[in-house]
Image (cartoon, rainbow, N blue to C red; front, side):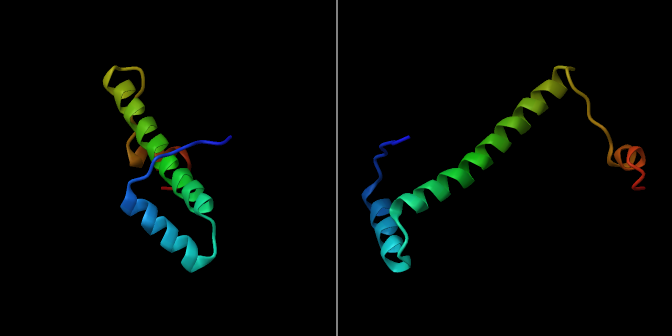
Length: 74
């Protein structure tokens, strides 16, 4: 799916320089950066959602000690 993104001039220059220096395309670096950052954002969202569920009583926490006992790892 094609997507258009406007980059600040300094980011575009850095991306151009990196692509020239490595022989990779700018698109490959943009794709890689997006995939990595998207995973971080998803993790943060899921952690926040779970925290809200715990605070609202819809989910509970388990101590590490109990978790280890449940899985015979203690």
